[in-house]
Amino acid sequence: MKRSIAAKALLVTGGLALGLLVSRPGTATETDDQKFAAYRNMLEQDNPGQFWVDEGKALFYKKGGPKNASLEQCDFGLGPGVLKGAYAHMPRYFKDTGQVQTLEGRLLTCMERLQGYTPKQIQEEVLKPHYTNADEENGTADNLTRLTAFVAAQSNGMPFDPPLNTPQEKYVYALGKYTFFRRMGKMDLSCADCHNVPGRTIRGVELPVMTDPQTAGRVMAAFPAYVLKDSNVRTFWWRNERCLLAMRLPWLMTGSEVDAALTVFQAIEAKKSGHPIKIPGIKPRA
Ligand code: HEC
Image (cartoon, rainbow, N blue to C red; front, top):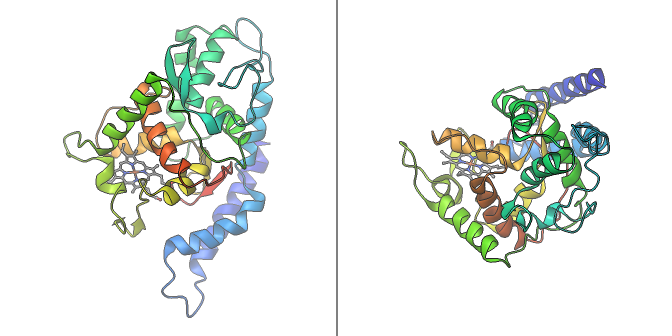
């Protein structure tokens, strides 16, 4: 399995290099984003991210942990064991934890409650590899990302529609909006400074306007995504974490309230577009 992933990654990288070298005459005005879009369309049929989804599925149904149980009965908000459409309706409020949780956050809860992992074990055995993987440019894979990719893919074809009914959900949405527009850190930057201004670019890369529903829809519907630059699958948490890091802010803990807040805020923008979820996505950088 590993070897075939490596071979695929090589193919992908090779293809990418070729695509960049061979610039057709008469297309000088084609931007990098357009070139990548064409390349992405070609790759969609054979997305290496599918390996993460398949491995996530195997992990999901595998018995493990101190209670030797699988995650099959995990309740993602639509009832125990209901996976179809669950991700499209997250983050959401869970009575049993009293928290608004992201998919990753909820998976951690189920590992604790169904499989019997202690918070310390979760920290050491699940989050540590997850964070290490996120930190490295060319990390390999970690189980939480695999599981997230699998469960998220069960919402394919549906648009985002996280509930905003309970006071907790409304509060977390407001927190997300506040966090998005709030200037923070020693660079005095907000997410909005980079993602609320049409046409803004950094090093030739156009920054997505996450307050534009069409853009938010397209961006979010493709996370978790296979990122060509990293030969790795990246989740939406990871993306927000990378941007917070660029802002010189503290590490975004997976499943934390701020994680849920930033996700809900952007998912509500995505919802307005009705853009269907299509996972694994595929992105040149992200
Ligand atoms: C200094 C500018 C800057 C700030 C501030 C910033 N970002 Fe980003 N953001 C980027 C860049 C650069 C990318 C990568 C774009 C690419 O490579 O496609 C990016 C990518 C993203 C993406 C993924 C886009 C995609 O196409 O997949 C999301 C979502 C995002 N940022 C959200 C945020 C959030 C939320 C915040 C605040 C916590 C934030 N960003 C702060 C520069 C910034």
